Image (cartoon, rainbow, N blue to C red):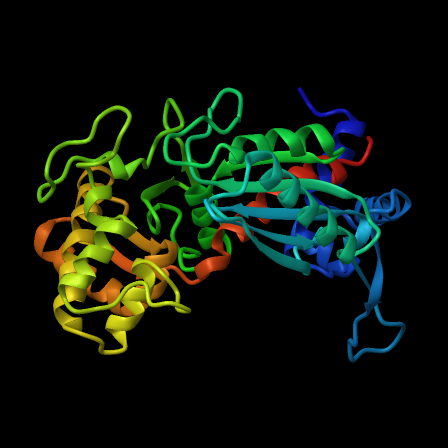
Amino acid sequence: MPASPSTARAINDRLALRLLQQDGPLTATQLKTLTGLSRPTVADLVERLQGAGLIHVVGETGADRRGPNARLYGIVADRALLAGLDVRTDSVAVVVADLLGATLAEAVLPIGSETAADDAVEQAAALLASTARSAGTAPLHSVGIGAPGLIDPVTGELRDSTGLPSWHRSLVRALQERLPATVLVENETNLAAVAEHRVGAARDHDTFVLLWLGHGVGAAVVLDGKVRRGASGGAGELGFLPVPGTAGTPSAVNCDGGFHSLAGSAPLCELAAGYGIAVAEKGQEPGAAAAVRAALAGEGDSEGFLGALADRVALGAAAVASVLDPGLVLLSGEVGHAGGDALAARVSGRLEAMSPLRTEVRAGLLGGTAVRRGALLAAREAAQEVLFAPSA
């Protein structure tokens, strides 16, 4: 059954808006070429989108031909604001952007372990509000939140998780109740993978696994361009993976004895200390990421530590490769970012010796910004579903 004229107009409008967002600004002729629509149809949709306040003239081409230059049309980017939050165990980072993703304001707030849950929620909510105010007067339309832990695939809510601050769940609920904006929450590792796929190290791969190495460990599975969450939202809970070299096996409520016991921050700090590398000097970056940076700078038995670290990471990478055969594994999180290409190369060599499957290992490109950039992309998609849907 052919689409009605009103439905066809809505489809054409959405297509044009997507192109303007991804490739704009564009002329009407360029829109005609990219959409395959007729010149009169493109002229009508341009007029319609301008009337709806979705696009405007942003300039003219400098075409070297006789006659007037062609008008360039672009998205009205300041129509609304978007926000991305990276919620960690000890901090909240916020980025606010326009509808084209251009960063307008950023802020980071440390939250101490002794901070009461209610106080932490109030501080984080105030940080978002003040950052949005500093970005401009447009309304905040959509907020994406990246947090550690499981996301219920049915309700979209962050589940209670042992070892994580209670204020995480309270913050999500508080923002959903207080803000007129759409508030979305997603696992931090999944959002990092989305960002790396769109604008980072996996732009040339639609199938890959991102291995998160930070305070804890985890993985994001991207198959055919889509994040796969699993039946219960737990796909990629690599910390619970039973591996050799630990004192026991994990349980349903505790990942001790799993891959976490080899590659989490605490066991890696212990490993570094055994190779003569300081991990928590006062005034310096604490944790395993600092140990990796120190080793790369030549502290202690650096080659011994980096080799042992690569051995551990390769175990997780080999398990992922043997089950999913993704072709690419990205190393992300604080430790992955600190190790960079040097760690990726070491893990690659060990993985090649362990697995018959060809699996490239790369370091993520986005570093500490990956989660909030992924959260911003989620907010942007939510906003354009509403704002870029002109009435038929």
